Structure formats: structure tokens, C-alpha cells
Image (tube, rainbow, N blue to C red; front, side, top):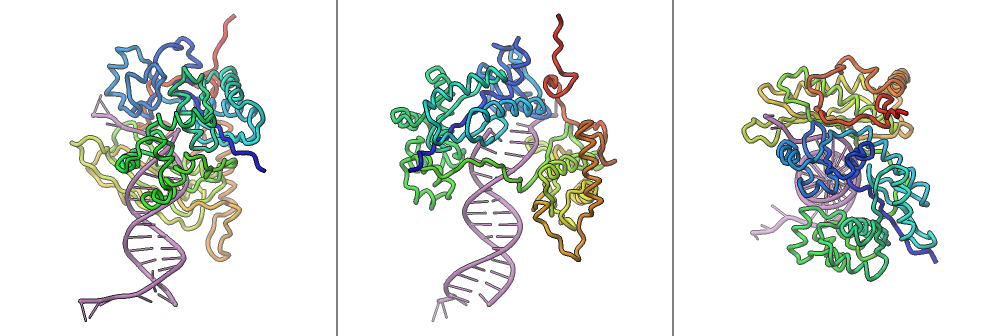
Length: 424
DNA sequence: TCTGGGGTCCTAGGACCC
DNA sequence: TCTGGGGTCCTAGGACCC
């Protein structure tokens, strides 16, 4: 007989804030927040900062409040967080049979068949990650991924009690936690579904686990049905150990300031095309379609609003930044209207196929070998000397619309200049 | 003045076919 | 008055995640 499936979810506590703190030990007990691009809103809060601000709150609204309470704010430093994430994942990988990195700060482990006390293993993972990287993590263990998520949630919510590790397979804990947790805390149940479920009298995770799967499927979708089954202990989701290539690739960004003229918007679009095509080549895909869109600010009621986008059919599946840039600039010219203050542009690459799998029509045009070589050279040079060293002429070196990051920490682990200096 | 950036999956509905 | 019954493919949009 096969052993019962067991999953763990390991999740970093206040990840971005914890990364900043690793290199600022003087802030060990100081509340910290990390801001989104352009220093727009709050996207991470250390435990002490949670009482002052909500997730996603605009920074300018709480700037004074934060200052009054001694909360330290950082611009986001994604190079640092990405590097720290890899270190954390590498430590965990060495301690479990199989790991699925689910996001920058979370991973599922398959612990099926692992002998011994898993609660103890959880504590060892916490200890070793903290020792090797300085990042605190929580561990949730259960028979399905959805329950492991909930266990992890419980480990945080009752941190003092749990010591950061919760195993929901212990029957008394399982029922207790499910009854204590609101249905909105379940993985996959967002705002809309919560409201709808509550209307049906389903309020807690426990209620959802006991609901009729057939009815859930009919009322909502198979997704909700699977969630309920997983809560009841039947695994419906497996570990994804190799991540499949992305089906679409996106680069979108708010400008550092509002733009009214077409020329700087074109610069931004060219820059986003460059980034998106880099991501495309990393996963060795080619795109057949591209969507380019621009928009004004959406929040200010006094501002004239405009948003538009176009889908461009590419002549053949390609990853050639020159072709993509040319077509994107032509497209943005078509949707640009004068008299608006634009805040954001987006480039989406669609209908991706893998290079090897695509067999071109013998008589249709296709990307040339020469184009592939040119892209290889660009990527090689940029990998060696830094992003943007080799770029199309449409991409400026320093843009007036570049994002604001006034509070950014150093590249402690990613740039020579950011390394710590130790004096004897 | 100032409100992020990336993804995934599912469903409904229209167009079209026999 | 009454107006078939399926099937496929595509797209837009909704909902969710971190």
C-alpha cells in the first residue's frame, strides 16, 4: 500500500522586510515596511509594523503616521530579495525529497514516506534556514496542499503556541484550526467567493470542508470543489516539481511621473519590450502575438481617464527584440491620444511556443539563424556586463520617466559595491 | 502630486460547422 | 403558436494568487 501523502508549506515571514533586516541588524526591533515600485504602496510589513498600516496602502497617505511611530521604510530591492530567496530555497532543498518553489517566499515540499517525527523536521528546517540566511520561516504540515497552507497560516497566527510549526494531521489540531479559521483565510477563496459562500451559510474553513462538492461545482467551478475536497483531506493537487514554461510573459510598469507626449511613452514601451523579450529567451520560447497597452491614472477622479490596448499579430513566432520593438512602437502610435496624462504602459507576449516544438511552414517566413545569433550575443554581453549594456537605440540609458526608488538599500549580495566592508 | 507587477485557470458566450 | 441538436474553437472577462 502506498503511504499517505504528506505536504509541507514553508513560507518566509514578512519576507522583504526580513531581507532588509538581515543587513540592518540595528533595526532588529524596529518596525519596517517595504514599498512597491515608485514607492507607491506598502507591500511588506514586519510584525511590529502591522498595527500601523494595511497591506497595499498608498505610502503618501501613511508617511507621516509611519514617521511618528518610528517605522523605517525601504524602496523595494528585487535583486536582493531574489538572491536571498534562492539561498533560502537551496537550504530547504537539501532537507526534503522534493520541493516546488511556489513564489519568491514560499515552497511546497512533498514529505510523503519520510520517516520519523515531521514536527521535528519542521523545526530543523526553521532553525537551519535562520542560521544560514537570517530569514525566519514558518512551516505547515498536512495531508493536502490546501491544508498545508492553512497549517502554515495557523503557525503564524498562533506563533507563540506553535513555535512556528503546525502539523494538521494531528486530529485534535485539524478540526480545531478548521473551525477557528474564516473561509476567507483558505487558499483560493478570495473576496468575491467569501461573500458568496457566506450567503450560503459557509463561514469557516470547517464549513467549506463539509459542504457538498457537487453543489460547489455547480454554483462556482471545479476550482472551488477541489478546494473543499482538499480541506476534507482528499488530495487533488500534486507537487509541480518542474515548472512548465510560462504561457504568457508580461512587463508592465507605472512611470515615475505622468507622461503626456508620445516620444517618452515610446521609450518606455521599447524598454518593456526589451525586458519581456529577455524573459522570453530565458525560457527558450517564441511569441506569435503581442499586446501593447497604455493608460492614464485610474484613481484620481479629477483626471481624464483613457485606457487602450492592441493585439499585434507577429509575422512569425519570434524572440527578436528588433522586430518586437518595431511592431510595438508602431502599435503604441495607433492607440496614443493627445491630451491625457499617462501613468502606465504594458507589453504582453502571447501565444508562446517552445523553440524546439515549433516547426515553421517550409514556405512561410520564419526567424533566421542570424537573428538568433544576434540575440545570443546581446544576452551574453548583458549577462556579463549588466542589463542594458547592449540595447536597441529606442531604449534610453537614463530615462526621465524612470521609477522612483528613493529609499533603496544597497545590493548587499548582488553587487560588488554593495558588499559589506569589515574593518579590523 | 503621490495608489505595484507579475502570473494562472476557468467559464460564458459568440461564431461557425454539420 | 411553433423555430434542432450537437460539437469545436476562440476570446474576453472574472477570480484568484503572491
